[in-house]
Amino acid sequence: MSSDTNPRRRCFSALGGPCEVLVDSEDAEVVEAAFEVARAEADRIERKFSRYRSDSVVHAINSSGGRPTQVDDETAMLLDYAATCHELSDGLFDITSGVLRRAWTFDGSRSLPSEEEIRSVLRHVGWKKARWSAPIFTLPDGMEIDLGGIGKEYAVDRAALLVSKVIDAPFVVNFGGDLFANAPRRGGMAWGIGIEDPDHPGEAVLYRVDLMSGGLATSGTARRFVRDGRRRLGHILDPRSGRPVEGAPQSITVLAPTCLEAGTLATLAHLRGAGAKTFLEGEGVQFVVDG
Image (tube, rainbow, N blue to C red; front, top):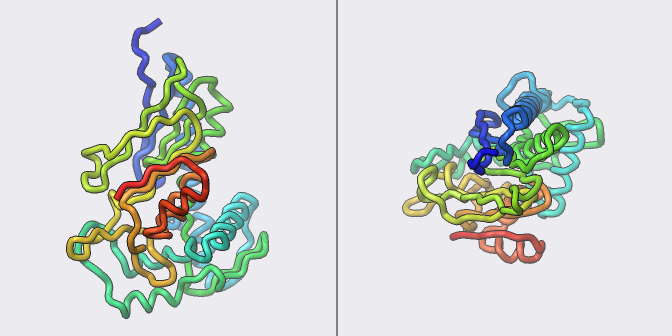
């Protein structure tokens, strides 16, 4: 047996960023099988739900011109989930708010939109303006949906489910920092997860989380933000004001049974601004808040 006990890592790009699969096994065939399954599922979900692809379900809905669109069962499930999140968050979680990117560019600059620009885009925001009765979804002309707030985490869980069907070894599926571990490492060891420092993305770790199993997701301002004077304004926007959420922590990491649940709770906490920590305490989940 090899003395090298480090997990094997395979990397690829999908869903707008770096992805990786870590397998705690010395069997190259097992590692390759996990990698191929995870990559294929990430690619499938990106093709189906990316707003940037002209052949995706999301593009079909956004270009429908106000006409009803019939969707498949998987898309219906995600729309149902988005509708539930909207209701539970009192409207703060809104998959139609992605159009606000027409006004905002979160590239680390000091370029801020005018009030007029924000008001103009806000006319096209509001889940309640859409009509959803499965399997028919009708979106008013000029509006868009964006499943980016749940799509990557859903992809992690889907990929992990499929990987678990082809290998019998501890593994982590990590898509852009949102991840799922199926089991502890060999010997009952935790997976050490480093959460990057928002002030030094890609260069420094803010804190370490020991994950035995389940999902982990982080919401923060590490890579997508603008500056207003000395303030860093993150990319998560309040659909009521059209502006970045005020008073939110720089980084919120949540552990939950699934990556989708972890990511949703992290986003909902961020949307509550200064009330993020209180919200998560009420949810009874493990979390780390910084800033």
